[in-house]
Length: 219
Length: 263
Image (cartoon, rainbow over all chains, first blue to last red):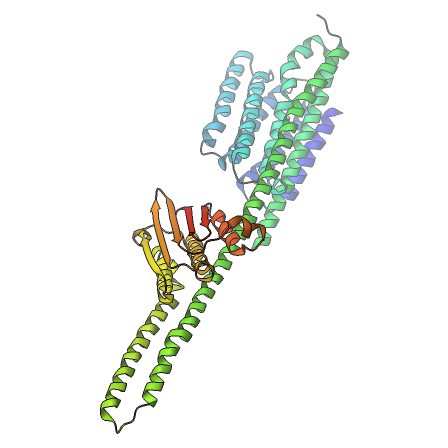
């Protein structure tokens, strides 16, 4: 049931992106829509794979996290680009760390085991970069209009999701082995975090639409 | 130490709530800080508007002063000279050749004087734009006006003619300050000697005006709320981050010193 709700949340976000970003021709908006298609496809294929073949679908998610890490790093780079000249260095750093951990895990545990370490490290680095973004935002003298600032909300979603999922990343192994009953609560936590992430992203798409309307009205 | 499943669930839920509250607090802080920035920007914008309005007012006052000087000059100087020429020419009797020649020469001299006065007036009209060509020249022009009024022993040390920096808005305000001070001296001071010093040192413009008039009691004027001109001086100097000091002593005259960061 949780999987179905999760897929529905993601499809809602995809629909919102198709609706609100339909006239936005910027590269990031197109990539966002493609990324959300990949998210939905991964969830549906993953669920279908488990139900049909009754085997672990970890390898599907192992492929997906490559897209996830790349997309989030790129999004954070675009947000930071306007605040610092070192954005490319800051944002390529987690990607390099993630790739190194990913390859190391593949060598050590194979492709069928879920890459929890790579994800945990990636999460910490994304939280760190999001905090840098907010710090630089506070530092700059010019105020921003939060109602029409999509990047702010996009990064806020990233911060909530990856900071919130720290508990999941820390406890998943321990709970899976020792407290199988309590493990279910982590699934609900992740469901809630997904809901939070995609809701904030939908709001960021609305802000994007508002921003474009405002710009058009100026002409 | 062993945990039950329920305890573990509570710990996970609480930890997640705490982990979500942290970014939430951060966002609330950013939002309120951003609102403060907006407020600050609005205040700065309003201050800029006030400053622009004051500059406009000053421009109008400088123009009014110029027009007033022109009107006075036309009436008291050129008008009188032309009347005198007219009277002299009317009194010419062609039969009396010798006398007529003398009168024509006198008229010619008066005419030349009128032309000179008109030229000076034309310069004054240009003077309205003078502040654009430099504060030193604008002050010089203003002091020429004071000289024409005469009756004063003037001692001027204007070192601003040589400066190469300028600040159009400040120049206009400084010129207006000087005009206001001179007007006050003419109207109220009953002075015979005026000393004016203007120079630039360490990015500070110094302007001092000393006169030996009847002086005044600043506190008394302030209490009686009569010092609108003085209030205007203080307000304008403050607006361009400067400092003004007025030292006056009844029967001994007044010393006004102004220091303004420049340019």
